[in-house]
Length: 273
Image (cartoon, rainbow, N blue to C red; front, top):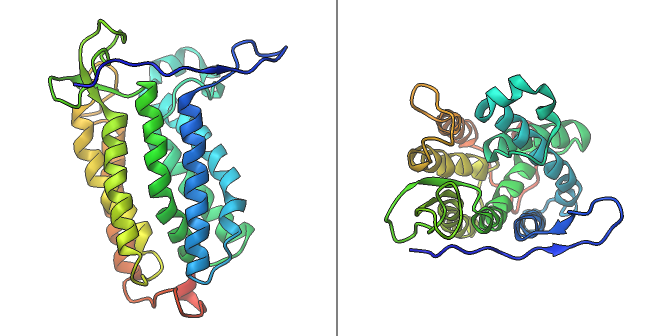
C-alpha cells in the first residue's frame, strides 16, 4: 500500500495574506490547464482551425471550473451547511466538485464558441475535449497529492495509508479516488491520442469523453467514503450525472455520425455548428 505523505508548500511573502502559498495541488491544476490548452491549440492547427482560440477560452474555463465546482459541491454535497450559512455559496476556496466544474465548463464553451467568437461549436469543442483529457491527468494528480478525495477503507495495494479521516500517519488505509481517476485519465488520454491519428467527424471527442468518463465515474463512486459523500436513493450526485453523460455522449455520437471529418476539409454549413 502507498504510505502517507505530505507535499511541501512554498510561502509567498506579502503584507495582506499571511497564509498565501504555492501548493502542489494548485501547481498541478495550473499545469493541467496549460497542458490541455496547448494540446487543444495543437489539434486546432492540425485540423485547420484557429489555434489561438483555445488560449482565449482558458480564462473562462478556469473561472467556470472553480465557480461551478464550488456551487455544485455546496448545493448537492454540503446542503446542510449551505442552508445554515447561505454565504457559504461565495466561499469558493472551500469545497470543490469536479462534476460541477465540468457542467459549468460545458455551458461556458457553448457561450464562448457560439455567441462570443461565433465559430463552429463542435469543431472547436472537440479540440478542447481532446486536450482536456491529458490535462485531466495532471489535475487529478493534484487531488492525489492533496489527499482530498478519500474513498472507503481498504487493504488494496493502491490504497493510501492514513487516507481515512481523520487523515494522518496513524489513520487507516482508504482508496484514493484522485489517484484512481488520474490513472483512468492516463488510459483515456492515451486512447484519445491513438484515435486522433485518423480524421474524426466533429463531435467525436465530445461523445468519447462522455462515454469514457460516464461509466467510469458511475462505477468508481461505489468506492467513495460512505460518511463523507451525500447520497440520494443510494447514489451520489455524480453518479446521476454520470448516467446523464452516457445518454449525452450516445446522443452526440448518433447526431454527428454522418458528418465529414474536419481535418483536410473546409468547414461550412450546418454540420460545422
